[in-house]
Image (cartoon, rainbow over all chains, first blue to last red; front, side, top):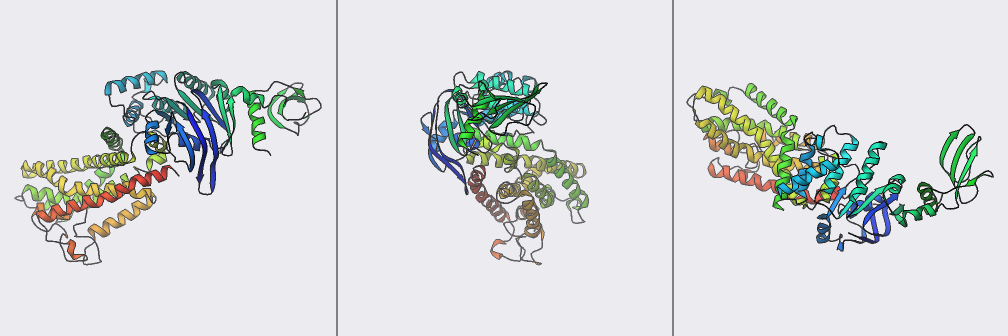
Length: 289
Length: 263
């Protein structure tokens, strides 16, 4: 299910959260990177039909989501995991999924229950299916969230910051889960964690200040820091030019990795950039200063 | 869409019926009413009083206070989806906001109706021990349906929707004030809705069951055209008017919810 966005704007009072977004999302897993406040969540909410755009065009699988009929058509094939999804504490996991399944129009009781069982197995929550959601950990809640998003076998899955706040083990588990489900559908992963995109996506877009500043293969982001990534080993202060991306203290001195268009230190050595360094270089270009 | 309405209704009912505060407020108020009623309360009705009169009096008595507790409990049911963080998910599902609001309303009314009916049935059982008339149970159900239920349905509509416009705590304060002014304050003291067809405590239906003016129904006062003589017709009119008055807030709920979700 492909997505075509053109000239998309969204204003909240005097604040313009999206300033003319143009983006094409093909099938498979697609990452949407950006700092907090870049406009990712606003874009996700528009794609999920939660928020109407101020202007612009959004076609999802050929349906124009700015129309009521188009929005409903998309929502019938959509799985959405919002940022900070709240679960009803009075319901059990199974009941919550039943409820969402019914609201998605899965009226065949046997088929719905079978699907819920399969999804609970998939996200590793079968053991707690009859437990109330009150008291679930952050990771468990996200897994319930992804299970509800996958109910009804949606063609498009939109997940907004799914790994924020999770411990490393849960994050890896969640990323693997997302990669697993992307086989035959479009999964749009919005995150500010570069590592999540590096590990799961081949294509990505980067947003800054309400605009898309990059779209293409993930390797294209790395290329932005090609020839601009340096390692500096020093016992003194960190280099004053460029952005220090990492600092590792070792017996011979601190090893700094720096993104800078010019050599940040006479002793600096050029190194192969990572995705995170490419992202930093990109953001420096997009938001100077 | 009907399937989705019933799904929302069923799960809203299930979530609320599990709320301890619903049962505690019902039990607390019911005990208070049973214990603290004065000499004119239904406990002191003569042994020969017929079942309709006995259960009508009890229903009116419960109806004076129980809806206050229910109004307080229901005041966060629509706004809670935003508070919990479930509103975005609900808005992304292919369910029309109207079905969502109607389902939540029906589920809320049903969830408050169950403890209210239970209270009346327990009371009927208590009266049955003294009076030995099995018709008490039948009249308990009738009294619930005509005295308590219309008021609950009326209160639920406002309790669900008003907190979309102003905060739930403010609604609770205003609601308690309205309840005493519009239902219990004698019409001879201040201009008030007490004793009119619009009083949700069920004064008119209770008067019909009891066979005489139950509290203030039809007593002279402000808005005299809303104060006909009590009787079957007036009771029916009162129930219909309460149902009609409960409709506008529900109609406005969908756009209010949509505005809240998209802000």
